[in-house]
Image (cartoon, rainbow, N blue to C red; front, side, top):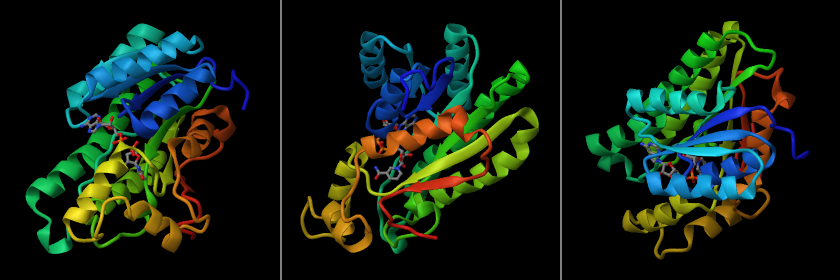
Length: 268
Ligand SMILES: NC(=O)c1ccc[n+]([C@@H]2O[C@H](COP(=O)([O-])OP(=O)(O)OC[C@H]3O[C@@H](n4cnc5c(N)ncnc54)[C@H](O)[C@@H]3O)[C@@H](O)[C@H]2O)c1
C-alpha cells in the first residue's frame, strides 16, 4: 500500500490507546492521514500520539474521551477540526467485553457493555456525522467505520451482552448507511475474529473465572484449532489493512457492509 494512500484524510479513532485502535492509528498516519485519538486512557493515547508524531508522516493529537458521554464525543470531533480543519473519517473502535454465563448476566454487566459498545458507538457516529453534514459536500466521500466482531452475526453462550452490542454495531452500519448517504457519508465496518490484544489477555482470565477453560492461556489456541479455518488467531497487524481500505477512497462505492477479517471463522 502506498505511503500516501490516506494523505489529506483527517480521521477520528475511538479507543486508540492500545490494541487495534492504536495499531490502526499508526498505520493510517504512516500513510499520510492526520489522526485524532480518543480514549478514556488519556496517558495511553498521548503516548500513541507521541509515537506517531515522532515517526513524522501524518500528525496526531490525543484527547480524553469517554464514548458513553455524548459531550465527550462532540468535544473529540471539535478537537480534530480545531487542529486539522475538517473531518473525513471516523473509526468507532472503542469496545469492551466481560463474559458471563447466561443466567448470571446482570444489569451492571449488560449496561456496561451496551453503553460503551452500542450507545457509545451511536454517539460517536452522530457527532462525527453532525460535523460532516455541517461541512457540506466535499469531493471525497465521508466515511464512518464501525468495529463489529464474529459475534455481529452469531452469539456464543458466554458473551451474550457483547454479542448483542456487536449486532448493534451491524444494525448501526446498515441503518446508518441508509440514513446518511444523502449527506455523502458511507457507513461500513469490519469484523475481527480472535485478535491478540489487551482485551483478549483479560478475556482469557475471565473465561477461566467463569469455568469455560481450566487454565489461563488455553482459550485462544483452543479457538484457533477448533473454529478458525486458517488455524491461528490474529494480531492487530492482520486487521489494519482492511481498516485502511475502508478509510481510503478505494472503498468509495461501498456502504452498509461489514467485512469479516477472522481467518475464516464465520463464513456466510
Ligand atoms: N480482540 C479481539 O479479539 C476482538 C475481536 C473482535 C472485535 N474486537 C473489537 O475491536 C475493538 C478494539 O478491541 P481491542 O481488542 O483492540 O481492545 P483493547 O482493550 O486492546 O482496546 C480497547 C480500547 O478502548 C478503550 N475504551 C474502553 N472503554 C472506553 C470508553 N468508554 N471510551 C473510550 N475508550 C474506551 C480502552 O481504554 C482501550 O484503549 C473493540 O470494539 C472490540 O470489541 C476485538
